Image (cartoon, rainbow, N blue to C red; front, top):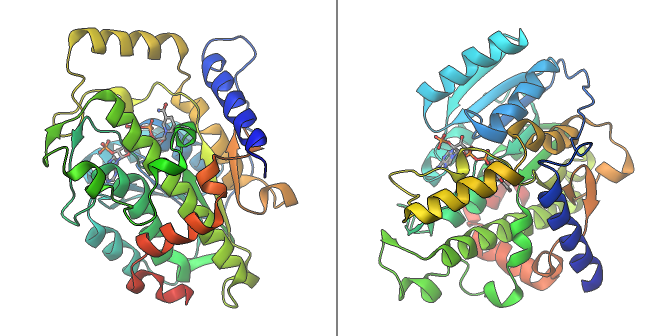
Length: 344
Ligand SMILES: NC(=O)c1ccc[n+]([C@@H]2O[C@H](COP(=O)([O-])OP(=O)(O)OC[C@H]3O[C@@H](n4cnc5c(N)ncnc54)[C@H](OP(=O)(O)O)[C@@H]3O)[C@@H](O)[C@H]2O)c1
């Protein structure tokens, strides 16, 4: 795929983000599909886009699992969703993407008699600090890319035929260039570890750099997973599909300050961000439209192999995602042997 096609789709993505929130007629409609009998898991579904995805799935009659790091928040979301949709088949499960042990435990204890039809890796974050997880990874990379990858691999044995894995990624992945993604240092500890101490504040440019990089890695791992599943004698016949999608520029809690990870620094930054989000961003409901479309649509050829989707349209992703040798190197670096056993 040409770099022109990728650059063009990046440009279209910018236009989409700049116009979707305020231009009349730019709202996307959701075509609801009957999903009774489908078991759907959504990470990070207590708020924001994940909550709205769960809401659409619940309205469709699916069995919905809210995978959240704080079960108390999850319970509040579950009760609100039941009231709003009338679907009582909604459940809360705890998972912390900042801990690979938590992710592995969740996957290994899933009841194998309950096949999963849809896994939506939505949980994500940005941080204004350089933080390492207890697993030793830079936190944005782990929460946005490594943990969902390990979760997907862990759940492969319990995925139903025609199951879908949907990674909620970001247009920001386009900002991560080949130079930003050295194959021998996926964690970027050697690039950043010398610059910042664990817990130290980082400039906004670095925050965005870490976020873009994590989303590019998430997509690279998703693309390679699709390739390996299709080639596998066990999973090939099951026709499992892995998608990546951009939800749009959305006014969710991701832009808010958090004591542990997100400090906007000055009042000026705070006010500017609030203004930009207030003017341009669309709603979390709109952010959920494309993930729901991918989770629910009939298996037409177009939605039946790996794609990067923006506003329900398949787009050409950034260059690193198209670079097969880099993708393969990242797969090797980000996939511990114990997690890839099921694919061997
Ligand atoms: N908003 C946008 O403009 C935008 C644009 C492009 C892509 N995205 C992507 O869309 C996805 C959803 O984001 P959002 O905008 O809805 O953000 P959000 O409102 O901040 O929601 C993020 C969700 O992820 C969860 N989460 C964060 N860290 C976690 C961890 N360590 N373990 C488990 N769950 C964790 C949060 O849980 P808590 O509530 O407990 O923190 C929350 O449920 C993310 O992947 C994001 O990168 C968003």
